[in-house]
Image (cartoon, rainbow, N blue to C red):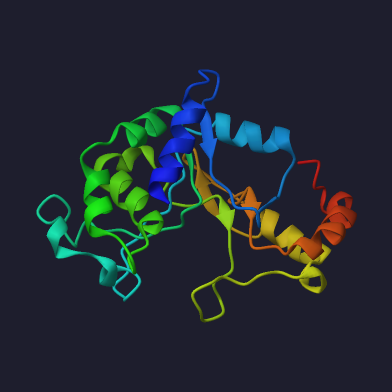
Length: 206
């Protein structure tokens, strides 16, 4: 997965006009119109890679001691694979020939490298450049290895409005209630309902 993400970044970097890079899944939806999302990203002073230390089987439990001393368990991080980064950080990721091979060798099978490589790498090398949060909202409230999938009946106007403005975070050093630009997971059968509700939640307006 990490090798595929690096290839995607490398290909996108070939276009010098690309300054921001976003990885989304097929189950993601935008919460704002294009111009709002574009302005949010282009005006941001940081990248958005979620990273946290989790003392659990899916956190520190996936650490391989053979990575030491180059990566210690105290430096090991977990986070969402869905990221947003600026061009400078993207160049660092595709140029990494030190940490990436460690993950290739020692983070396999039950170790999900796409949830550990970027959080660990960015935290170790580029903490000041990272907001340490994701721009993609997801619901992990139900126990399991997969987040909640929102089917058509669960999509309401109130729910979408809450996703857009129901959180508090920091953006360029200021408090903001726009913390997520995207959300997942939404089933394909929810599309018609999403399109119908779009004007009511100002989907295509800020």
